[in-house]
Image (cartoon, rainbow, N blue to C red):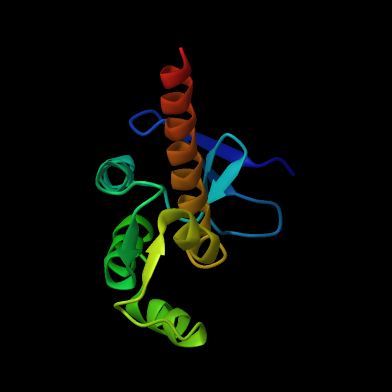
Length: 129
């Protein structure tokens, strides 16, 4: 049985309507599969207000994780408790990515990580030229 696909021209996403042996819907960008489609405006806002070197509070990252991935509060509270994190603990964005991409919305976090690293590499390349 073939996968049925539909192209969402507005967002440039391929929407998998059916996967073999499942009725779940997924969105695909390149080789990445998403349970929910990423909202690029929200991801761009995060990238515009955060960088890879500064530290940010868990409270700030908690809020942004919800904005970017539509994650629920219970899952984030369980995550904080599991790791003994407090809302005033601070993390760099790469530290946040390492923790967050293993949980709900991890594929969206990986996408943001990839884009932020690309931006950093381009900036470093431009400085050398």
